[in-house]
Length: 332
Image 1: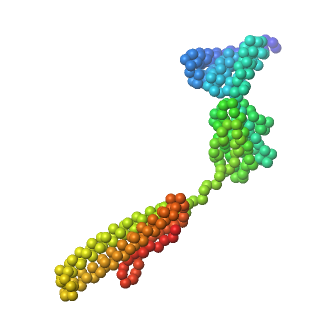
Image 2 (image 1 turned 90 degrees about the vertical axis):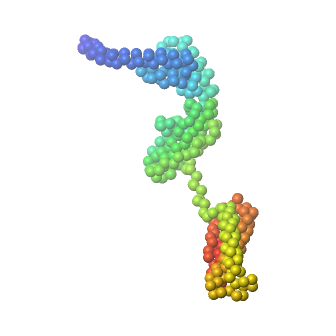
């Protein structure tokens, strides 16, 4: 029986040892690369190499170096946790000096730790409620506890069957405690609401529905209407000037056809007379309209048109009568 067990163990070891040897060699190579980067002061690129080295071969020395790397890159909570892990492993291995050093490093980091408390009131604890921090489930025993976390950006989500999913982007400051209060989730899990960033560190952020969008603005601003009147009035004054010039041209023509007094006009001058009257009426009408529009626009602008919004509108319409002309219809 013992012989069979020994043979089986030998077979298992012989099958596993090549892969183990490969992992150990890769872990050592990554560890050496990380040490070379650290020697140059490049801590940030060294940390991922130490992480992978420790995953492949969880040596206590690699873990200590990884904790040191985390501390140098500002990941205080991760460094603190790994130093404590090194101390525990060193104690079990009888390495008193290493245990003492690791515990001292952890104790020095403790006052610098950032913390995040996710508070879930009873009224918010829907059936099947699941809280996650950075994609990792936060169990109910952790709710309400200010637990160590690396400073920086984090995401907290709350979800439950048949409920909407809420997300909060939390920015945890260095050596600060941030609190997130989860409200009762609304029905309809088909939609997801994105929340604004949480307040500054050492404050309380509440995961809550986003504020309703502001009602759409209706109509035109008073300033737009005012300037519209001024511009329209300017165009009308220019038009009146054009018609007045045409009217003056017809008057000169008629003076040549009818004489100085205008009492002996031939029949052929009837068209010029009619045109002259039309140009005169249009010129006067457009001058009057332009003056009115400019006055109205100026009045609107001077009474606070740049500050208020109003459902205002205006447009020019033809006016029928003995003399053709234009008019303004509007509200403001």
